[in-house]
Length: 138
Image 1 (cartoon, rainbow, N blue to C red):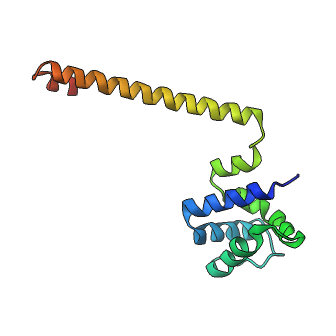
Image 2 (cartoon, helix red, strand yellow):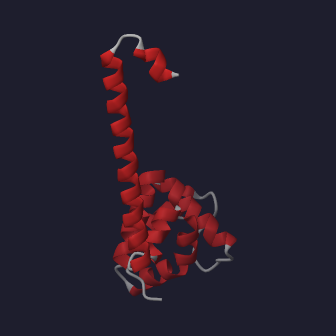
Image 3 (cartoon, rainbow, N blue to C red):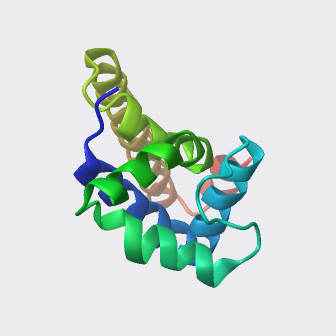
């Protein structure tokens, strides 16, 4: 499998921004160990070491050795990431995934439009007669 290290870096930084760098590094380290990884110097619960290795050394992928370490971490990274972020790495170029994303956006927009129209109707009814509040709310 060919890796886009720039996309991996962006995804890991997004994960850290959402959950916190310490959490993200520890989660990846825990998954790495749970999957049987032993070659990399990651230790469950050693937050500072895990952060330093993953987020301050290897993430930049600026040497063949660092790229290899990220390659070794990929199963753990994919397992540790929330589904939306792992999908970004695995399915980013998939036509089906892009179609699903567009469909999801369309459903969300339709739901927002429905709620907005309902609010307008309720406000309109409330403004028409004073006794309508009890009717609308029940």
